[in-house]
Image (tube, rainbow, N blue to C red; front, side, top):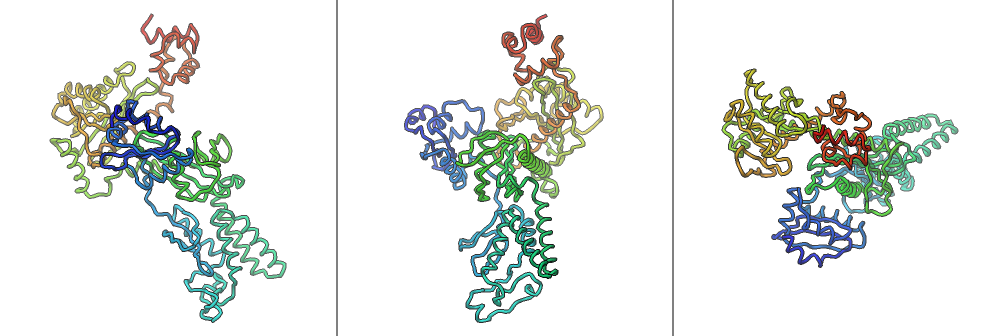
Length: 602
């Protein structure tokens, strides 16, 4: 659908809140979205020039549009989530979470059993959970059985069978783990009182259970039943130990859901802490694949709705790292600054950071543990896709970066046999280039890298990847030609946004299949050079290596430089300001000094 075609139908789209669905010619659903105003939101796809390749591709594929009007933004939010789960459109955020979570079930039967299950059967049984860890459920179950005697047999304990004396107590009764309901030694009312204690424990509400045990212990002590009192004392200790193990915040916080998010490129990671009665009952981190450069607020809103629904959360408050509009009514959104809630948010952020780092380590080691043939298979595929003369067993990748528009640095990573060879990584401080010039910087570091390898008689890579477009690739090739290395290795450029691959001198780029092993390997190499370059920057900043370029201006001190950067964010933006703009911020005298410095006026 073109913009002109859309203009013919735009007036038919309502202004009310609702959801919209995009379809292709084959009537396949491409995307589901929600909006406060359907016409405004849908129109934005057709009247803007989109920088993002996937958004442009989506618009090109749209054949027709359907929409549903709802009463409120909350209804739109709930309907959007439901439709995404049902249809899983390829342009919507993809939440990579296919696990079946374990539940604790209280079986719908006489003298209900309590056990672990992953299958929910609609037979009237009560399911508590879900839980994210089987180990945690088993630990809970062991602790419950130690403190609350429940039957574990699968006998049909109907009143008719019990009255007929059909069953006899087993070893569990003699061990004190069951009170013998099979012989009528425990009534259903007494048994259900124990089940209520189980529910309290699973919901993190240990106070009534402890109070009941303490009252029973005191009663046994008054009656000189010291052995029974000792058994209860040990149970109280067990519950206290469990509570101290899992309660890390103030119990007055009550029931809250805590969420944190990290975004990297096309992926986002969201951590969820479920807090019940001030106790962290569960934690879960999920990966979401962004399809249309969604903002963090949009991704987090979707993740919150998904996770609260998956865990059947009824918590009246959610704690998040930034202000966001959550459309569900009666839910308080809190962005804590201090106190226990802030500590909870920091803990969630620690969890999501750990998850991201662990995922990254696994991704980098993707080929480790595989046979040589499996490793070579990916490299042979890359050789065929890029039509390389040699098998790329040695790959190097370069990337430039700068800090606040100044002080450029570069990084080079090395992969051998498809695996990161970290001992061969190199970083570069730019020496011959003044100011920000990505092309000249790339030329310098490529020249320095391969002159060094030639001087030391080190083997050259079969494939060199320049993270950038045609300009950076052209600059790199200047150095390759100066070193007389043309033909000794293949050099390609990788466009940052659309993952296009450029060869020197070619007008058109090539695009590898999105899910091909070749492109996955190239992505891993590119992601690693980004990570290595960012780490180098952080180290430099922590050591105070970077001195702000503004402080080089005679008459401009640290405070003025900081003030300018705080307002305008980067030195590049400051360079583009007029003298009048600078006067408004720092006054006439200092504005003249800054403007003259950047415009070469003596």
